[in-house]
Image 1 (cartoon, helix red, strand yellow):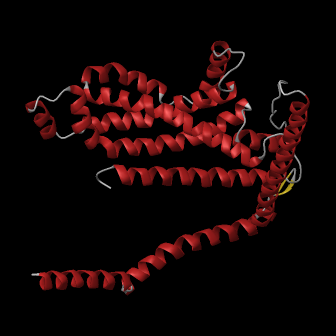
Image 2 (image 1 turned 60 degrees about the vertical axis):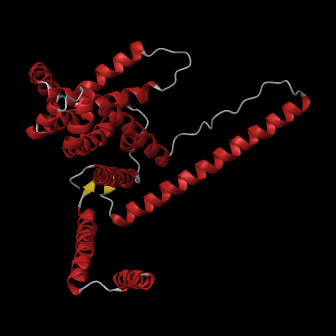
Amino acid sequence: MSTLSETTSSNLVGRRLVRLLSLPNPGQLATRAQQLLLPLVGIMLFLGFWHLAAPQVQTSLGAFPGPVAVAEQASALWQEHQDQRDRADKFIAMQEERNARILEDNPEAEVRIRDYPGAPTFIDQVGTSLLTVLAGFLLATVIAVPLGILVGLNRYFNAAVNPLIQVFKPVSPLAWLPLVTMVVSATYVSDDPMFEKSFLTSMITVTLCSLWPTLINTSVGVGAVSQDLVNVSKVLRLSFWTHVRKVVLPSSVPMIFTGLRVSLGIAWMVLIAAEMLAQNPGLGKFVWDEFQNGSSQSLSRIMVAVLAIGFIGFLLDRGMLVVQRRVAWDR
């Protein structure tokens, strides 16, 4: 028996090694090459067209920037960020040395470290925008998913809420922003606020504009749960919460994540517009400031921001897709 077991085990190990060491067949190689080369070809064609067409477009600030000028400004923005961080580190170190001397003379003295007063860099504003959009998106998810479950489970609640959804769903962030700004300014009054008013204004605007796709897709997914599963739940006399947790959510997860991906894309677009109009810190404000600056480098810097906005939006969608594949049963 031991000899047979050892032989079987060695055969399994051998087959696994063969699979690991075997080269992909020509069909697989062709598929992988196609998946890699076609996007590269598309990108190269786009860059070539951009490089040739940009000098033909003359603006009040000069020729439209080509890929080389945009790459140079991207490098310059990164260098500005590095220089700003070095100055901030020196500013903090200077305060720490001063505080050490004060405490040496008077151990009971009150000392503090002040933040560096320099303007936020492009990288800082990217971080601010990401933090704001994720906060607004999470708040929208917390509101939309439970509400969508209720709408999908109860046809009376659906009939009552559906007109409101259809009315508020198409409202532009341009309409929400002044109202949110005034409400936040009137209600969020504190001598030591936890959050900046600009952050709350942008976050709430993002929430109001991005919750609808998740809400609608969640309600549709819940409403499409198999009647057989519903009947089984009734036979087993599952409680409401157990029914939702064991039957409704597993069946509706694919539709919920479809709504979440759409909501995240809308949230990112809405945030940039809100930051630009309200002059709140972030990528939108960076674009507007460069537009108002009107220097010879402004167009190139705006193009850097445009590409960053598109690339970050792509990464956010890919990240949500990865989460969906790990959670959704149909993926």
